Image (cartoon, rainbow, N blue to C red; front, side, top):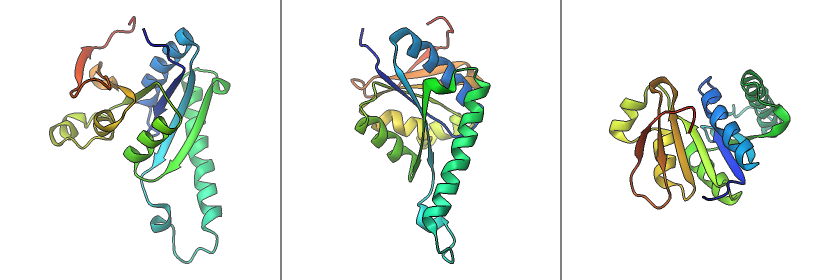
Length: 169
């Protein structure tokens, strides 16, 4: 079995993060792995910030701080030690930023959640989790908390396999 040293948990800042943190925490303890929680702001920062602003850097820093506060609050709800995780905010297309961060920082595993709208996205292949699992060179686990199922995509496979959710995996 491959040893996990680094686990990435991208988040959309919803309570679905709690399910991903639970899985990442269990694996992190088992393998003594680092856990990074990341949020990618879905925008081109310079297009979304008012043009009349003189200090875009200050606005981005302010947004970054607010997102980190939200992430900290969600992590706190999970009962995991906040010191046991690293929080990261990136600006840009979420799929590209997740894949770029995962590959550049040499993560062994990405654990993501899929929202309740998964069936709609699944039909057209447009969910962030689906696109990351299809394009990433890093192994991806997609957890669908509402459906109590998750998908495991290995970098050696060209398709996604569905497994029944089991707390004792």
